[in-house]
Structures are given as structure tokens and as C-alpha cells.
Amino acid sequence: MKIQILGSGCPRCKQVETNAREAVKNLNIEAVIEKITDINQIIDFGVTATPALAVDGDVKFSGRIPSVEEIERIIT
Image (cartoon, rainbow, N blue to C red; front, side):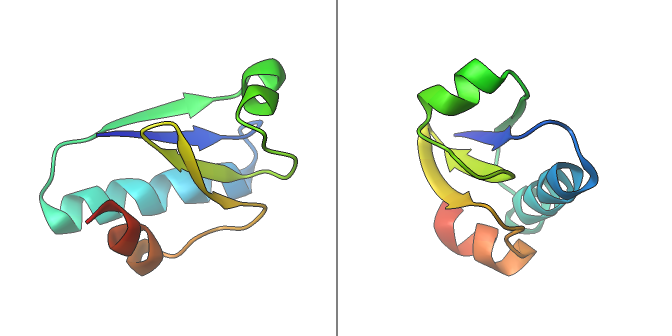
């Protein structure tokens, strides 16, 4: 599984990454967590509001910080 954090690297983006890492740890699953900061790549995902989170290339959240529990639900 690949989890991608899309954003400029702002504090909100960092919080999404922290929440994603915690969700993966809580569920004891293997996942690659990748940060994408390149605006052109973010646009290619169709994202217009960051931070965003994608799982295996499919955007699940955009424009807000999902909770650890929300991330756990979408990756199980």
C-alpha cells in the first residue's frame, strides 16, 4: 500500500503525515508513506486544496486534516 501526502510541507501537511504514520502503526500494516510537494504532481492528482491524502493513487481527503481514525477506516 502506498499512502501519499500532497502539500507544500506546511504544518497542516505535516500533521496529515503524522496521523497517517500513527494509523499505519496502530493497524500494524506495511505501507510506504510518500510526501509529494511538487505543485505539478499535486495538480495531476486533481487536488485543488491541500493538504490531501491519497491511497494507492486515489485521493481520499483534500483540504482538511483527517483524523487517525478516519485514515484507519480508509486503509482497512
